[in-house]
Amino acid sequence: MQPKCVQICREDNVATLLHDAGAAADVEVVGEAAQGIVRATEPIRAGHKLALLAIQAGEPIVKYGFTIGEATRPIAAGEWVHLHNCRSRHDEGSSSLDLQTGVRGETRYE
Image 1 (tube, rainbow, N blue to C red):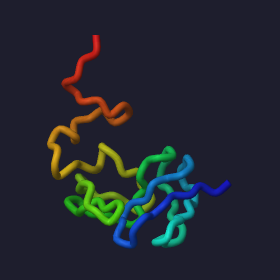
Image 2: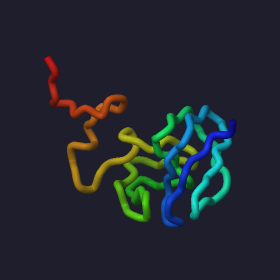
Image 3: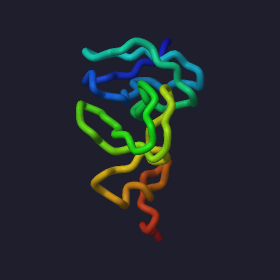
């Protein structure tokens, strides 16, 4: 089965994966604003964001037609967009969240 992702608005430069995608998988972009096929550059899990086009450092990350953050480094089309290459413009602490769990670095569970 070909993995799919959903693009909500034409302005979106990321889409949400509906299925896990392996490295080099051709991901079908679906939705009212769909723009075709994007090749994943790495394994990306369902529910995570995939860059639909190249995004330069400092450029906005747009989802649902709204800026949800900005790129902290260049992001290639097909790359996973997450905490390692995107930060919030509203919450400075979001850049220090654990990549896998999303837990803040200063949070301790004992």
